[in-house]
Structures are given as C-alpha cells and as structure tokens.
Image (cartoon, rainbow, N blue to C red; front, side, top):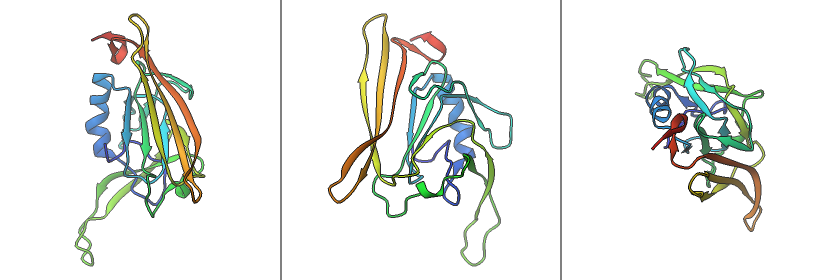
Length: 190
C-alpha cells in the first residue's frame, strides 16, 4: 500500500483515518500477516494489531508485544518502508514518546492555495514496536519458508540501513512472522 495505518512522525503526512476505517477490517477478516507501506519517509513497524478502539481515529489495538517472533494468527504487522532514497526523510520527526498524527478530515478551502488542508488528531501509539530514528535510508529483505505439512510458515524480515559513500548495509531490525501452515486469520483452515 502507499498510505499508512500507522505513523509516529510529527509534522509529516501522518496515518490516515480513511485507510484505517476501510482497510483494517479487511486485513482482520482475511488474516493478513504483513502490510508494507511507503508514504512516510522513514522505517517503523507495529506490533501485530487486530481491531480498533472505538475512538474518533480508530486507534489500532496491539494484540501481542513480542518484537522478535510474531504469531500472525493474532494480528497484522504494519511496516512503513519509505526511506528508499527520498531527499526529505522523516525519521528525525518521530514523537518522543511514540504518538501518532492522524489525518482525520480536511478543512475549508484555503483561498491562497485553492486546497483543503488536512485536519490532524494526535493520539497515543500503543501499537508502535520499532522505529529507526538514526537512519534515513534503507530497505527490507524477506525470506519466506512455506514450512513442512503440519508445521509453520515463516517470513524472516531484516531491515537494513544504507549509509556512507559506498552504500554500506547495516541490519537495524530483524523479526520473524509465523503461523501454522495452511491457516489464515484466527487459525482457521484455508
């Protein structure tokens, strides 16, 4: 996806209420393991989320807090990987402690620009699992193992920062997504 469900950057694009309202229920219904987005120009990821709080911004609900091995039958992990070479990184704009800036609507047309400015709401970010404030550029590598019959399917994810004049790669975040082979949301058989 492009637009994001999660973002902890201030004074940037922000998470999108419309995306939360439309897509999070679909991800929950179909037991999606991982959502990869751009739009924000940094790297961060969520704990697995399932459902939303009944707030005006539909705050995603974290269902587990293990950051190394994540059982995706419990919820969907969201990754923002938008630091692929932009000249305007947003990793230096993270709220501390983690909060989210959510586009919750649009204002009246600005006569000077002819555009409707976004209206933001600031909220807590209990879903925030990892943020890379130190490195503006990077990419993720995914190693998928479908597993043996009766075993687990896994995705090993490594996020690398890219830095220096020769594009040095440094692993910054590593985690494994796992679920019993042949299941989707909530452990139901396919």
